[in-house]
Structure formats: C-alpha cells, structure tokens
Length: 254
View (cartoon, rainbow, N blue to C red):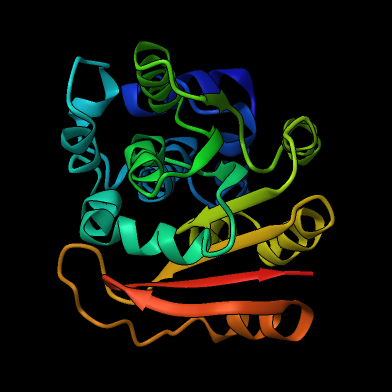
C-alpha cells in the first residue's frame, strides 16, 4: 500500500487517527483482487468501519465535558453492558481488591472506572486503543477526574509495544479483551490465539468476552465461537464462564 492510498483512506475523519498497521492489514485483504484501486479503497473503508467505528457515535470523535454514563451510552457495545458492569466487575475481581487492569481494544471502556470505585477496588487502569480520538477522550477524563488511568494510541498488532506497556504495570495484572476477537480475526486469522498465548505469560488473569447476540437487534447468533472457547478450555484454567446482556465472559489463567 503506497502513501497516496493511505492518505486517501485517512481523509475520512473516523480513520484519520488509526495506526498505519491497522489500515495496511485491512487493505491487504483486498490488495490482490482484480479490481481498481478505488474499489480496493472503498472495500478497505467498509472493513475498517465495521471493525472500528460501526458502533461508535460520531459525537464521541470530539471530546466534550460529558458525564461518564452519557459517554458509555454513545457506544452501542458499552451501552448494552451498562446494566451489568457491577456484576461483571464483581465476578472478575472476586478475590482481588487491588490490581493493574490492561484493557486491550478498550474503545471507551475507560469510562467504566466509576464501577471500580463502586466496588471499592483499587485499580491502576491502562487502555490500549486504535482509534486516536477515543484515546484522547479517555485521557481527558482520567486527567480531569484525577484517576489512576491512562490510555495509549496503539494497534494490538504492535505486539512488542503492547508487551512493554503491560510489563511496566504492577502485579497482579488483569488483561481485558472485551469484544475484540472478531476484529482481530477479520484482519489476521488465528491472531487471537497467538495473542492470548503471549499475554498469558505476562499476566495473572485474562478476561475474554464476545457477543452472543447481535448489537442493537439482540438476535441470537447462529455462530457460537466454539473455536475460541475450546482453545481457552484446552490450554488454560478457566475460573469463570458466564453470560450477561448478550455477552459471554471467560475468565482464565495459565
């Protein structure tokens, strides 16, 4: 992918702050097709939109002084998780009151920090997110409210950089991978397995979630993602497996 194609894709505001590696990997899905460059660019934008911005309100691309719950409700994924945050975090931190959380592909999940406080948890929170505008939004929120949180603008395919960030955090380290498996697999098949294997070596607990119902319509998926749950059960110790609000959570460690 040459620079002119990259620049053309980044003209769209929603893609303007995506890491180059994510755009490149999306473009590679169509690069060898016998179609024009314009058609390749169009298909790349459609894939990027599906992965990174399909469920995000455009209002979130401009940081504003809004209540955390207002922000959470502007992303369909976190909006549908809203009634269940307290129960989710209660189960994740069942025997832990103090930890480092590294939230990979966080979206705007950093705005759920208030639920850590409600559960009287001492959390040092780190978000890693590809959409630069969401990174800025979370950092603004953390700084304004003097929270133990920070957000990094990084692709999950930049594995060595992600690893360095995680290793700087104090133990116990808990990794969140909320609804990111499908996005990773759409760019590189089986990358989720590779990532989880590597993360397990430098973390104390991993929490993977994936939707069991379509966002918005709430229709049950025919595909149940057995491939990832079977992989986790075969290779790790699963301490909890539950479903809340059309989202299944697997909590596990080495």
